[in-house]
Length: 117
Image (cartoon, rainbow, N blue to C red; front, side, top):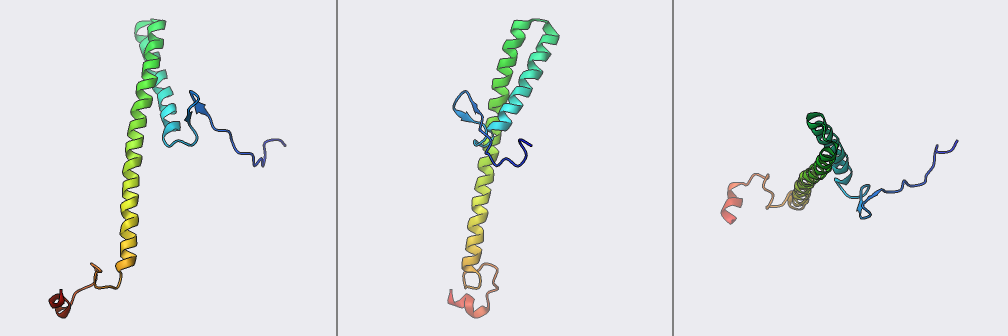
């Protein structure tokens, strides 16, 4: 059957020709939440006012605002996560480097070691 077991890589989707949704972190989620925000805001405005043209404008504005809002939120969290990962990696490297030496902070210092320093 066609489609089963194909090892052909999926083509990436580029939004507006430059934003690679598949490979850019947070891009896919931002577009999805933006489209959901667009639908909710446009439909809500239409149900409240029955003005089609204005509702379409509100939907486009809702898409842009929701997409950008989630984009910045997601990228901020991603940067925080990378900082925590870097600190954890450095801490693990220092633990391995100093383990068993006199610089090991977990090693109990005896009275003679304290007088040397």
